[in-house]
Amino acid sequence: MDQWTLVRRTAPSAAVALLLLTSCTSGGVSGEPGASGVRDPYFSKLGNGGYDVEHYGLTLDYDPKSGRLKGTAEITARATQDLSAFNLDFHGMKVDAATVEGREAAVSRAGDELTLRPEAELTDGETFRTVVRYSGDPATITDDDESEEGWLPTEDGALALGEPTGSMAWFPGNNHPLDKAAYDITITVPKGLKAISNGELKSEQTRGDRISFHWNSAEPMASYLATVAIGKYETKTSRTESGLPVFTAVDPTVAKDSAEVLAKIPEIMEWGTENFGPYPFSSVGAIVDRDDDAGYALETQTKPVFPGAPDESTLVHELAHQWFGNSVTPKSWQDMWLNEGFASYAEWLWEEDMYEDSSADESFKKAFDEKDSWAFPPADPPTAADISSEPVYGRGAMVIHKIREAVGDDAFYDIVQGWVATHRHGNASTDDFTAYVEKKSGKDLTGLWKTWLYGQDKPASP
Image: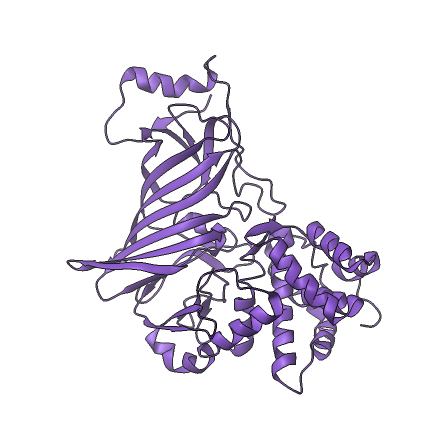
């Protein structure tokens, strides 16, 4: 039997402690523990079974000088089985207290698996609330590809990035793309700093020498797309022609270099809506930090993050992700090419539409000639370190272009917009996509998938 501890401010009575420690073997308990992972092909321990999160309420207090974070995660979820216990993904920091439905919960921890055993069993279909209070120095996580994510301290604050595993460094949750939820994130920081997150700013309150920012994301969001950026930012609000709110936050050291390209956001969003269908969220924007604060751009929901002033293609790429990846989210990390292939192809389409000397055909030929594009099939990266490698991007975009060639432009845009509409705010796999394209086009594309999506060898010609 597992060793359990009851995390609470006061010691439990002997009877209550005995009940919690032995409930897993009690004859009156019919539920089972939820699975400790969803068996993702590349991250088998990420995510958890037995429940579906509906909402995260995260209350964070950060001190940049000490690097210490205090947090409270209020997690509203629905049980998908009778549950005697369930897991949360959580890395590093100390758990100070945990409750389920207002009652102290027994807690066990092994690595990044935080297991909670509620005092009363949860029944299939029941909506329940879990509160975890935690504190400590949030960690920076180094991925298999040597990139850094999690909690990244910066010169004037911090930056939280989560793809693919890093969100568990700053809040406990069901850290897999399959479980999307709404978020309210409130961050308290020293006065003089700003705290930016996903969605819309609902309130800003100053108490003494501290200031709190409350952000709300009403539309479903995968945990890897959640972000927090703390620092001295120049912020700006505007709207697109159709009225969509735009919010940008830029580090003052790169504000001048960023102004011209960020001014294109409204135009890019109108173009994206025309090509991909209605925008799936209630606001858009960008966070631009210093060049060395992160080694990559990331499509964090509604406000992609950029390390320094982005170029136009990168801005288009990350904004396209709001449709492809953020609204239509992969079922597993093996489906990453659906994110990156579409976003990369969006760059080709933008250049084709905006510049007379560019075409998607020419972009395809350049990608075809890139040796790195052929290291492995886009739908089958060999390891977790490869899910963000070139074949997922360039060869993924080649797959999309080959579909366009096979079905023609009218059918192609019907497919793209229909795909986004069908899986809006949901999850989809590569098999879902290939089946949808064939059904929508009425064509057998077996040869296309075999050569471009799954083929090991480079074709003799494009």
